[in-house]
Image 1 (cartoon, one colour):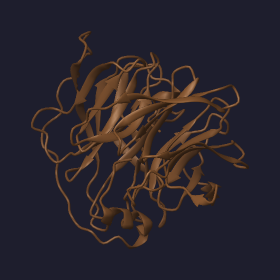
Image 2 (image 1 turned 45 degrees about the horizontal axis):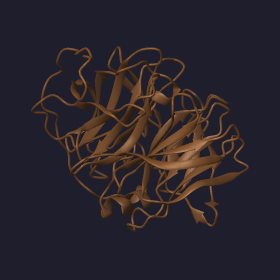
Image 3 (image 1 turned 180 degrees about the vertical axis):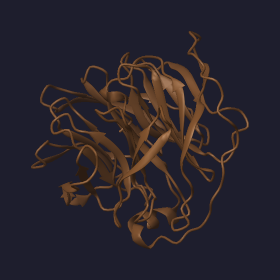
Image 4 (image 1 turned 90 degrees about the vertical axis):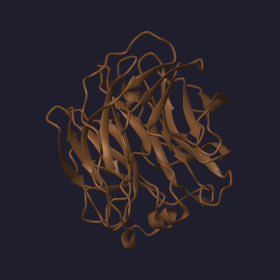
Length: 340
């Protein structure tokens, strides 16, 4: 999830009483689709697909996150700062360039979305209330999957990922608002009966995704601009942990992560509307950029790559509103290619 100001953290904590203002427009027209080349360190130009949201008068922001493909081919996206009554979860038909509301409520601040391989429901992380909720595949039937403390502290769940058995892994950004390294990686079993801390004392963990072989978890730490690798055994227990990639982001910070079929990492950037692409050995392969002279967009939070295809859809937000941009990924999409 894109990092917010101190005032915006208060907004997330009291999502029903947000009082900020602003709006904007996007400049530039869609261009032609650009195919990926074979040059290392290249620039991949993303092209505008459509605008999904405008800045909400009630919250002073819009923030798109959590793109994930459903079984029906629809792309589901969340708007973190949408007020009650406005769509907080949307389904996008990327071919027709249309969208419709799937869910809203007067409480949640949803920062990510993933479909469970266990029950097929859509799971959402509620950053403001420390909860995980789920919806029926097409929306509706909201249920609370997990609520309460983990090892004596309530979570600030940011991004989520599922293993092949349907157990849930969460980047818990606890401590972010205080600027302290109290963050964690937490696993919750698929029946929500047990929560286990797999890593702690982290600096605002954000993105989280399994590698292509489900042998371990990649996770990013926003305030350290680093990506770490958590190796797991067959039971989901940690066998090792190390810093894998240090992201030279300048003023930008590490946001969400997705992984393609070749194991490449797509690292979203907050503070720059771009994504950094690395191979599993940490080599910088490419940077995904918006067209030149695009204004009013500040962050590329997340991406989803079409299952079995290479077309990737990136959520981009800023004062101009919330947009989908598309580009050609370096390899095909898999379950881990939904950005969590």
